[in-house]
Image 1: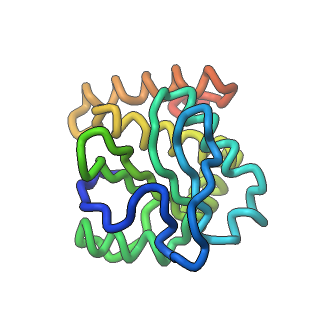
Image 2 (image 1 turned 30 degrees about the vertical axis):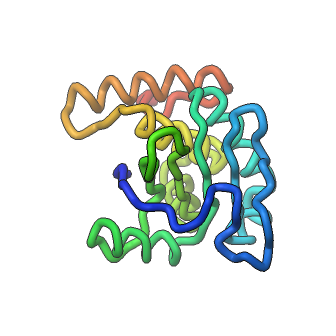
Image 3 (image 1 turned 90 degrees about the vertical axis):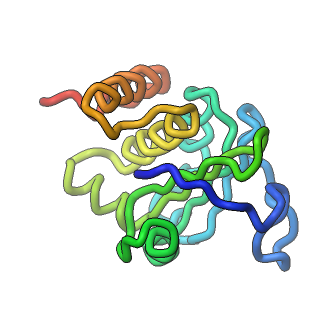
Length: 170
């Protein structure tokens, strides 16, 4: 996970595919918008939008969330980080002050990671949504102390929504 700063080409209210029109606000409690770019999300995790909305609300942030594919995230990762592979989530800082940041999730990577760790995919998605939200709030994990503080913050937020601490060793 890395925070990236990009210039937005589209207004937050408009879908990049203009044939689909305005993006519905699926998380009115947080003011966040959640867009499903990869329809496989609806088959694999039917409640993904609600999971992300709940995590964003618990973290207290407003952002644009994109439920996307490994292929799309790989392209973004190659373009913005020079890493030509998918990653679980990318967080983009707002292009302008007062605008929401953007958090993009890769379905295949999240599915694989959840399976490998023996965690529920919904819990892993909630964790990554909180992780991205904390990045937007200024947290980072470059140094060991910062990483520990961020892990503790993630655990506190996840506890509020009934998701087990992903950092607790069993």
